[in-house]
Length: 173
Ligand SMILES: [Zn+2]
Image (cartoon, rainbow, N blue to C red; front, side, top):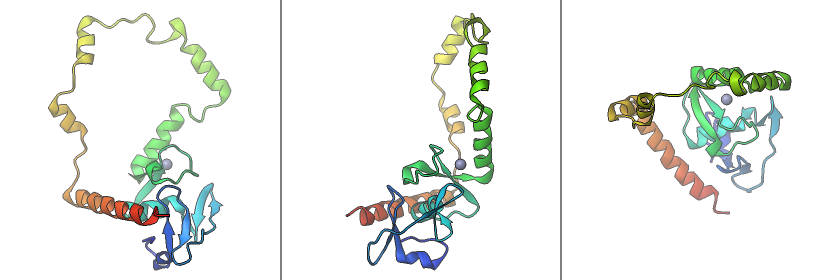
């Protein structure tokens, strides 16, 4: 059953693989409609319903499509991000040329060919190569791991348990 903020969603089930929504009693597939390119059910974007149902509801978090495809609402394609992280993500993408015109991209790739490439002809010294090969120290690895609060960890454990249970329940047919 969909556990959305609104109790009305208790009447429905949602498939974690496809994001399809069913009537919990009759099993009938429910119609969704596109709103800003996103499948939406009863005014709620399906990717948000998915995250809230299987990961647990986290207030003020955005739900991001990993592959950028708003139609791919498979649970494996969804992730919670803070609003800041989410904005940064989409900003860096546009900076990376994802939204550049074909013409601009062609110019950029021409500019980076051969001797125009900033790395052309540069050779790393043996010392630098050694450093690059050196595995990361435990300390660095620790730093890279984002610390999680106990509450967050508990939340994730709960979400995981819920997800497993839902998958078992929903994927029987
Ligand atoms: Zn996004």
